[in-house]
Length: 168
Image (cartoon, rainbow, N blue to C red; front, side, top):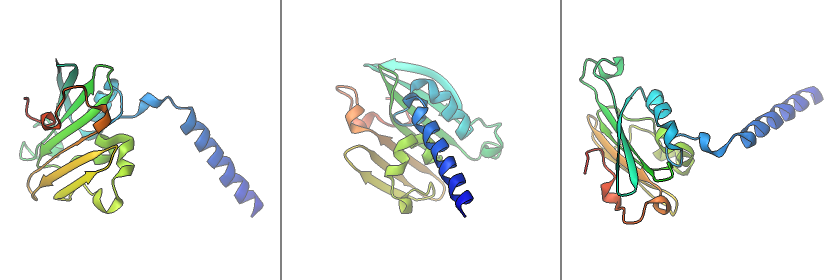
């Protein structure tokens, strides 16, 4: 019994050491770094498009290629747009399509702020408003759209209405 406890404590110590020793910018999704956008795309099975910059922020649109097995011959779609500030930190994401995205990828570490009963990507409505996170998801069984952002990270003059998949 003592040996089992020692192993558990040893494993817990190793896990804590590794998690505390990782640099803060390895997160993807919200609060992640712009360099992780390609990783987000890979995790979601999407292809990143060119970045565009306007008014102190950048956007990258990730889309599901029609050749992907997930798209079922182009019948299923998913488009994600990630917004990053001048420093390269992702402050907002938006998505739409017939496939639900993996919210744990899009929200990154902020995913833990979403109550477990609301974290299913198949939910048709989700409205979350906390001081550190806003999430809005609406949809039907065939189409969903959503957006999430960190209010304190919005660039000056940026309106949350700009957080959408379609270009402004």
